[in-house]
Image (cartoon, rainbow, N blue to C red; front, side, top):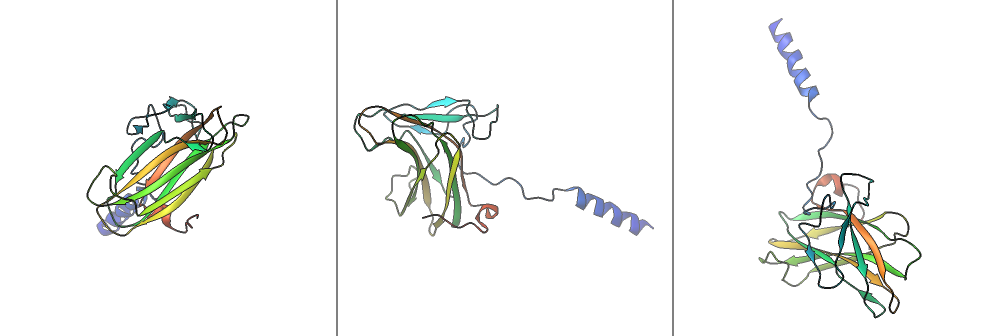
Length: 195
Protein backbone atom coordinates (compact mmCIF):
# COMPACT_ATOMS: atom_id res chain seq x y z
CA UNK A 1 0.00 0.00 0.00
CA UNK A 2 2.84 2.38 0.89
CA UNK A 3 4.60 1.61 -2.40
CA UNK A 4 1.38 2.32 -4.31
CA UNK A 5 0.94 5.73 -2.55
CA UNK A 6 4.57 6.67 -3.24
CA UNK A 7 4.16 5.80 -6.91
CA UNK A 8 0.96 7.88 -7.12
CA UNK A 9 2.71 10.84 -5.47
CA UNK A 10 5.65 10.51 -7.85
CA UNK A 11 3.32 10.46 -10.86
CA UNK A 12 1.49 13.54 -9.55
CA UNK A 13 4.78 15.45 -9.11
CA UNK A 14 5.96 14.41 -12.57
CA UNK A 15 2.74 15.45 -14.26
CA UNK A 16 2.53 18.79 -12.46
CA UNK A 17 5.75 20.01 -14.10
CA UNK A 18 5.81 21.92 -17.40
CA UNK A 19 4.94 19.84 -20.42
CA UNK A 20 6.06 22.33 -23.06
CA UNK A 21 9.46 23.69 -23.92
CA UNK A 22 10.46 26.91 -22.18
CA UNK A 23 11.13 30.24 -23.84
CA UNK A 24 14.22 30.32 -26.05
CA UNK A 25 17.41 31.94 -24.85
CA UNK A 26 17.58 35.20 -26.79
CA UNK A 27 21.15 36.50 -27.01
CA UNK A 28 20.02 40.00 -28.03
CA UNK A 29 20.01 42.61 -25.26
CA UNK A 30 16.71 44.52 -25.13
CA UNK A 31 15.28 42.71 -28.20
CA UNK A 32 11.75 44.06 -27.79
CA UNK A 33 12.57 47.66 -26.84
CA UNK A 34 10.36 47.27 -23.78
CA UNK A 35 11.15 50.67 -22.24
CA UNK A 36 14.07 52.26 -24.10
CA UNK A 37 16.98 51.65 -26.51
CA UNK A 38 19.42 50.36 -23.88
CA UNK A 39 21.86 47.70 -25.04
CA UNK A 40 22.05 49.18 -28.57
CA UNK A 41 24.73 51.44 -30.06
CA UNK A 42 23.41 54.51 -31.85
CA UNK A 43 24.74 55.63 -35.24
CA UNK A 44 26.10 59.10 -35.95
CA UNK A 45 23.29 60.36 -38.21
CA UNK A 46 19.52 60.43 -37.68
CA UNK A 47 18.84 59.40 -34.09
CA UNK A 48 16.32 56.62 -33.46
CA UNK A 49 13.50 57.17 -30.97
CA UNK A 50 11.81 54.77 -28.58
CA UNK A 51 8.05 54.57 -29.14
CA UNK A 52 5.17 52.63 -27.58
CA UNK A 53 4.07 51.30 -31.00
CA UNK A 54 4.64 47.56 -30.53
CA UNK A 55 4.90 44.53 -32.84
CA UNK A 56 2.50 42.49 -30.71
CA UNK A 57 0.33 45.38 -29.52
CA UNK A 58 1.77 44.96 -26.02
CA UNK A 59 1.09 48.09 -23.92
CA UNK A 60 4.05 47.22 -21.67
CA UNK A 61 6.53 47.23 -24.56
CA UNK A 62 7.47 49.31 -27.60
CA UNK A 63 9.68 49.51 -30.66
CA UNK A 64 12.34 51.73 -32.19
CA UNK A 65 11.36 54.42 -34.71
CA UNK A 66 14.09 55.06 -37.30
CA UNK A 67 14.52 57.71 -40.00
CA UNK A 68 16.77 58.35 -42.98
CA UNK A 69 16.87 62.04 -43.95
CA UNK A 70 20.09 61.95 -45.99
CA UNK A 71 19.88 64.19 -49.06
CA UNK A 72 21.26 61.69 -51.59
CA UNK A 73 19.21 58.90 -53.16
CA UNK A 74 20.03 55.25 -52.65
CA UNK A 75 21.42 55.79 -49.15
CA UNK A 76 21.21 53.43 -46.20
CA UNK A 77 21.75 54.81 -42.74
CA UNK A 78 22.80 52.41 -39.98
CA UNK A 79 20.91 53.77 -36.99
CA UNK A 80 21.33 51.00 -34.39
CA UNK A 81 23.87 48.20 -33.93
CA UNK A 82 24.56 45.48 -31.39
CA UNK A 83 27.57 43.17 -31.01
CA UNK A 84 26.91 39.79 -29.37
CA UNK A 85 29.53 37.23 -28.21
CA UNK A 86 28.40 33.77 -29.32
CA UNK A 87 28.43 30.99 -26.69
CA UNK A 88 28.67 27.85 -28.84
CA UNK A 89 29.21 26.30 -32.25
CA UNK A 90 26.34 25.30 -34.51
CA UNK A 91 23.25 26.85 -36.05
CA UNK A 92 21.69 30.08 -34.85
CA UNK A 93 18.20 31.37 -35.68
CA UNK A 94 17.78 35.09 -36.37
CA UNK A 95 14.59 37.10 -36.95
CA UNK A 96 13.43 40.72 -36.93
CA UNK A 97 10.10 42.50 -37.46
CA UNK A 98 9.63 45.84 -39.21
CA UNK A 99 6.85 48.30 -40.04
CA UNK A 100 6.82 51.24 -42.47
CA UNK A 101 3.89 53.49 -43.32
CA UNK A 102 2.93 53.91 -46.96
CA UNK A 103 2.63 57.36 -48.53
CA UNK A 104 6.20 58.47 -47.83
CA UNK A 105 9.34 58.68 -49.98
CA UNK A 106 10.19 55.28 -51.40
CA UNK A 107 12.57 53.16 -49.42
CA UNK A 108 12.91 49.94 -47.46
CA UNK A 109 13.83 48.72 -44.02
CA UNK A 110 16.86 46.45 -43.83
CA UNK A 111 18.35 44.29 -41.09
CA UNK A 112 21.87 42.93 -41.46
CA UNK A 113 23.45 40.01 -39.58
CA UNK A 114 27.26 39.74 -39.64
CA UNK A 115 29.45 36.94 -38.23
CA UNK A 116 32.91 38.01 -37.03
CA UNK A 117 35.58 35.41 -36.10
CA UNK A 118 38.28 35.95 -33.50
CA UNK A 119 38.79 36.94 -29.90
CA UNK A 120 37.65 40.58 -30.04
CA UNK A 121 34.21 41.05 -28.49
CA UNK A 122 33.54 44.40 -30.20
CA UNK A 123 32.87 42.98 -33.71
CA UNK A 124 36.08 44.57 -35.04
CA UNK A 125 37.35 41.44 -36.81
CA UNK A 126 36.66 40.84 -40.49
CA UNK A 127 33.36 39.26 -41.46
CA UNK A 128 32.99 35.64 -42.62
CA UNK A 129 29.22 35.86 -43.12
CA UNK A 130 26.96 38.77 -44.02
CA UNK A 131 23.23 38.53 -44.63
CA UNK A 132 21.18 41.64 -45.40
CA UNK A 133 17.42 41.17 -45.43
CA UNK A 134 14.84 43.57 -46.82
CA UNK A 135 11.67 43.91 -44.75
CA UNK A 136 8.76 44.71 -47.10
CA UNK A 137 6.46 46.05 -44.42
CA UNK A 138 4.11 48.75 -45.64
CA UNK A 139 1.24 49.48 -43.24
CA UNK A 140 1.75 46.19 -41.40
CA UNK A 141 4.34 44.42 -39.28
CA UNK A 142 6.35 41.89 -41.30
CA UNK A 143 9.12 39.54 -40.16
CA UNK A 144 12.22 38.18 -41.87
CA UNK A 145 14.36 35.30 -40.63
CA UNK A 146 17.27 33.04 -41.47
CA UNK A 147 19.83 30.72 -39.92
CA UNK A 148 23.57 31.20 -39.53
CA UNK A 149 26.13 28.45 -38.90
CA UNK A 150 29.05 29.11 -36.55
CA UNK A 151 31.97 26.73 -37.17
CA UNK A 152 34.67 28.21 -34.92
CA UNK A 153 34.90 30.05 -31.61
CA UNK A 154 35.45 32.66 -30.38
CA UNK A 155 33.06 34.60 -32.58
CA UNK A 156 30.63 37.49 -32.40
CA UNK A 157 27.43 38.37 -34.25
CA UNK A 158 26.67 41.96 -35.22
CA UNK A 159 23.18 43.28 -35.96
CA UNK A 160 22.52 46.45 -37.99
CA UNK A 161 19.10 48.11 -38.22
CA UNK A 162 18.87 50.55 -41.14
CA UNK A 163 16.31 52.43 -43.24
CA UNK A 164 17.24 52.94 -46.91
CA UNK A 165 15.92 55.87 -48.93
CA UNK A 166 15.60 55.59 -52.72
CA UNK A 167 14.95 59.22 -53.73
CA UNK A 168 16.83 62.51 -53.49
CA UNK A 169 15.80 64.64 -50.50
CA UNK A 170 12.71 63.66 -48.53
CA UNK A 171 12.89 61.01 -45.83
CA UNK A 172 12.03 57.40 -45.16
CA UNK A 173 10.97 56.16 -41.72
CA UNK A 174 10.03 52.87 -40.12
CA UNK A 175 9.98 50.77 -36.96
CA UNK A 176 11.94 47.69 -35.80
CA UNK A 177 10.93 45.27 -33.05
CA UNK A 178 10.93 41.64 -31.87
CA UNK A 179 14.58 40.83 -32.62
CA UNK A 180 15.78 37.29 -31.88
CA UNK A 181 19.17 35.57 -32.10
CA UNK A 182 19.09 32.10 -30.56
CA UNK A 183 20.85 28.76 -30.80
CA UNK A 184 17.82 27.04 -29.28
CA UNK A 185 16.86 23.92 -31.22
CA UNK A 186 13.14 24.73 -30.92
CA UNK A 187 13.63 27.45 -33.55
CA UNK A 188 16.05 25.53 -35.75
CA UNK A 189 14.03 22.36 -36.28
CA UNK A 190 12.38 22.34 -39.68
CA UNK A 191 13.47 25.88 -40.51
CA UNK A 192 14.67 26.56 -44.03
CA UNK A 193 16.97 29.59 -44.38
CA UNK A 194 16.10 32.26 -46.94
CA UNK A 195 18.62 33.39 -49.52
